[in-house]
Image (cartoon, rainbow, N blue to C red; front, side):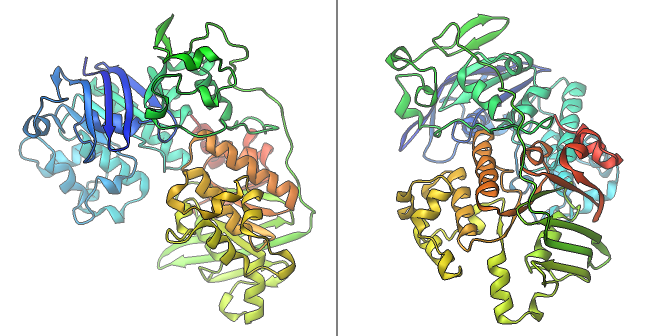
Length: 572
């Protein structure tokens, strides 16, 4: 067994964070570890490679290739294991790659023996980079997918027996994610290597993992073959995560996330950790901590109930989305934007009607964000026209002061990372009050009313962003954008980095705002399942050009363009 974790507990100044975790990874096995943010997945991974942050201590047992590393292994022993017996691949390749070192230098420094140019080129070829000149490039000169391939090559350069991949595809578009996952599976099979894949994307885990462990509040609640867990979850938490997944096949009537949030492990040490969020909880669930128990076919569950009603992945109920008024609110006509010799937008045209949500999909580099920045006035197009509510806003500097103020009220943006629009030094209430000053006097809402609009208690107005969860911060960012009562929201990957349950809550919130306020949205995403749930029409961008557009169901069910077909085929 390459990795054996038994009774792993990680504690810090605030108490226990990981509480009694056990899992194994064998040679040639792809094991998955899934769960919401705050479950302890990444800390478990860091403990397995001896890289816990300062102030945290581990107890229990972690054996890597038969070597015990908890409590007995010094830094010298750990350095001998890292890179050679076990290696780590992280979500953000920038956290692994020094911006001042070339791709080849990163690979060479972790290779055993003297690294030749030919050997570096061979290592790049193993991860699908056939151009040897990439070895001489710096991380900022590479695309996101290329950086992740280089990071993987560097992680594999020491020929490890075990690879721990921590969210390696979270920030990637669908086609690049598909390529990286296929690459990871191929390399793992070719080398006979063990892989521990950590992710909050259940589709990814169930698609490629032999076994999956579901983690929650510092402990494992369910384990078993990925296919079995996907088809018949035995724990209410696993079932809740599956129900929250957006479908790419049909529009759900309701998107259902799990209410509440993950509690600290120390608060639920003597009961079922999921009891407070579970519809099936009884006094028995809170009386003591349920152990993992076998239920057959290699399955383990920490639920005390032998049978539970309706532990199905989802209740299928097809819903509809608002189609808008038909009157064009946003008109983009033949938009062109070049950066030097690179054409980011090559004549893009689209429309968004009042009250309508239009999806904008495409891989990284397709021009989605450049289009959004052009509409927001952050980029000036080289050619073409942008019209918003009858006003030509193509060149924002040419507008009068009164026209710019009107545009500010007409269009707002919700970004992927809410920290880009929330000042960490200001309370939520102060942020919302400041934003509301730009609204028309008759439309101004108090901070408490804005918070209620996005489903948060008015008392959150006294908090600062750091005191909120990721989903709560995104709701505040949406409230800030709504403070001026805009007619159009530009949503740029607003749920890409959220857990599946929080994602469901935010998507349902945005759908409700469209219905209740009549707010139009241009929704940018690389996730086709998300676009199915939010957008009545979809525009597909490829290399700066619109290759397909139309009713979302038609585009996804019967794509006419080869590129759209590749996007649909890339869904795990």
